Image (tube, rainbow, N blue to C red; front, side, top):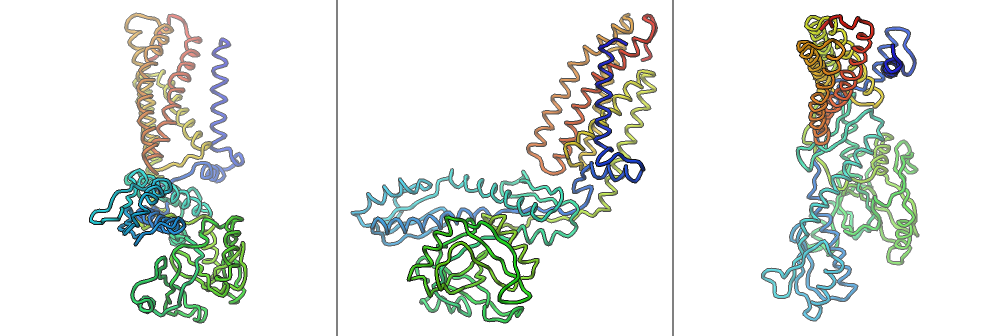
Length: 542
């Protein structure tokens, strides 16, 4: 054996050892069938369709985020108009993307237009139809598109943090790809997703805002006090009846609050569950504010107008507590509400992970039982082994001794594929098993191309060694061409697909790359070794 061929086999041996060790040798080399099975289970991660679990499709209510941007703009526009003493009759929202400003003082029209042009660049300004001294602000389409994209990205990130904080293993959180407002959540091994759904769906939108009036026994009573029309910049929100005994199912009460919060959930630095200091046996959520928010909150609460007033803790548009401001409050606060330990921990988790920029609703929910996954694994393995055995038999019968070469290359192809998935932590899904079976077919196709080229050269009168060289050289470009086009297709499946489709793409790409190595490099090395041992004029068994 020449030196070059020797180094080829050393490289192949090293790759085989590394692959076997990666599949069955971690965390410790198995000494029994039971330990081998355990190692395989630890190294090969199974997807939802094989392991069982929960499949959820969430729809993000993007219109809420757009409407919130409109509300914030109205509040900011009113504040700046007041600061700059620009006289207007009314600033109101027509809908989430249109703001109407009526009865602008003619002497202030130029100042108003300059203000909008410089400070409210997200909006297009035009004279309002039917208004002699009115203007309409319309949210720019590019801004609407940006809000939609930002909201989806923030929602995906927030849900990912919440799911990871729950400690669930190998979750899949991604865009579905079928609609721009849907998110896919797959939780392998989770048969009952109730707890996960509650944590996912919890808005976590915390606000600390000043109480204007209340509590009232009903929303109608609150409106009646103001003649049916709330004061500008206020809103009515339901709240917990703080006079009810702990655990008592009392009806809700209603508060009139300022719309503009002093502090929001984005200002939180931390949140933790703790035993309640007021109600023994129950829990509360203590939170701390960032430095900037603490300074802003402290300045507000020390003002004479705020002392003696009430500050509402609002979570997901519900008043949890309305406490009297007795002195300056800076960097901490608490949320009480007769929480259990688990519910307090869940709420603290939601607050730490951040608020969802918009609410969500569940479009689809499926639960896959582990028995179905076991059946899929069993049938998939049977199909893979069965197809491989049939293919091996065909190769041995049709190509005789050279068929052994193809069989070795095929087995090594699968070993490399499984080892790479184990090392990379890739998730094996049912479509992934289909990708494995397709890889077997592609491996056979590559060997057939090479062997038929060799046969053609032998029929043309060449002896074995030149025929093998020409056969590999001529088949190489064809194999590369077919594999590259398939890999490109699989990459697109991975980029635009989700869940099981990605699993199929991953196994197919890895299998194709391994197949190029085994069908060209390994198979050629085996042929070279065989040719070096046989007589120059001997016939090649093919």
